[in-house]
Length: 436
Image (cartoon, helix red, strand yellow):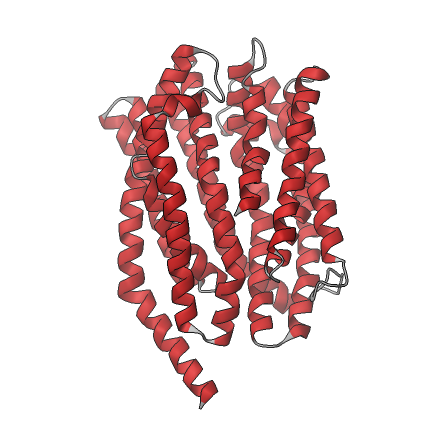
């Protein structure tokens, strides 16, 4: 969790500095927001392999099967390297049409293309650093996992002002700083996983179809969630562009970028909590400990609820503080502040999603976790298309509040009414058989 606090700096510091570029800050900031869905999608592949592999490794360790746990790590390395090559080549080839599909305007394109092309060069270190860090966390080395994020975040914070303003590289400097920080994180993670004190160390092995398939099937939950999140951002940008027109559309896209940046402050530490507890869920599921799993669900919910609830109150009371981190113009700060308030009325409901969806995913129970997550996103997408037709275009920002409230209620009802009784029956029976 503390590592993800630093990840906040890693994720939004580019936007903070870019928004302060003289004469071009707002346009450059909106350009980064346009690039964000495609660039975040790259991380989705890292999470797919990292979460899927670490879940299988933790379950295998809970079952005392170290040989299988070691094979899972080797196959995960193969998948990450293969994905890095394919993604880099593909995104370079389609960068121009892709950026326009994402909502880029002619004014934004030079900024967006520069940032996008440089960022793509960091695909390999991004996948290795983010994906393999889950195997540190999955073996209980949370301090090392935290430090991996800290290394990247500190490098990014230091390099951004030097390259953006000192070297006068502008938005290109922000992208270069991000790539160099990703390299630093990757080197640190690889070094840690190669140390003798790590029970399941980093190594290469011949890929096995069964294990690769298992990693991807479990990790597909996280992958699809991230892709759907990016699809939502793309749809939001398209709707804002369509109904907002040329000038007002760019302003609303800037507001959407500020909202997404604030959500990074909300979600990164929450993801740190669930990532830190993933090994607990996986290990005790493999060992058949139902009561300890219930305690883990409760602990994640309380921690996420407290953190997200505090931020919800803060942004409702003083949204201009958060908007002012990224913007200089008074009118834009006022517009972004109103957007933040509309989006976060039911933000605390996300804590329910994190506790239930991520906990079930860590145990490999994808058939339960996936519908809970997708339902909320379907509600969000429906709101994006319906609200601008019946209200002002700015009302589209209420989509976040509506989906958070409805999604939390649906997830809680399904979990306690269907999922939990089945999980209890499965694990209690397993524990009884092992003890008998």
